[in-house]
Length: 114
Length: 115
Image (cartoon, rainbow over all chains, first blue to last red; front, side):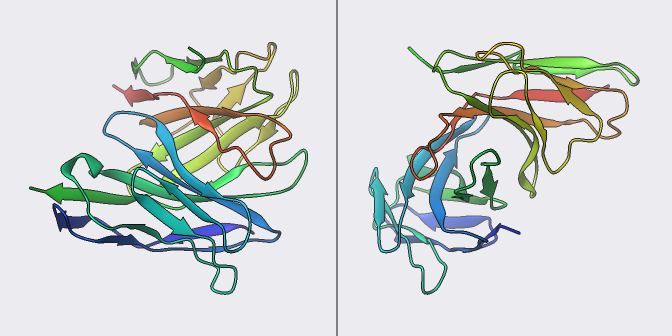
């Protein structure tokens, strides 16, 4: 079946540090890939997405590249801020009319200290 | 503004009671989903519905029930058969087909606690 594996947290970084959160996947078809962010007490918000190999999704300084050869979609940011503290979820969706659903990783909690 | 509204934000249930969580969307999305979130386990799919009057079990449907009588609404009932219902419940929606593009829009969640 389809699955997503994220690096375990929590991750604690100092402000302005470089961030990488690893995400790898297995899929029975050709997936679309997503990163979602969840702030405390809230639902999930779509951060970025990529729909085909070598696509790069980007938003708010975050980037992730769809790597089919390594089945990865690692999230990166060059200089994190305290406001980036949240839980980040990697997810995939495989094309399957009538049975389409997102599969999530377990989430990575990120804390940025001033 | 379009979005998904979940209510209530906090809900307390006594042992043996059924409770219903509300999810309403005004995005004209065809598909709706219910996820359960527990610490350290990410999101697990409970039920989903691609069209009105039809729904499918997800990975952890036991002890839950849903209905989809209107496109805008997808309520979730947590029954007394659900042995460990304390969790954060998230509702989501998306367009169908949206196979290679849109992600989901999520509500702000309902935190259910058994007392």
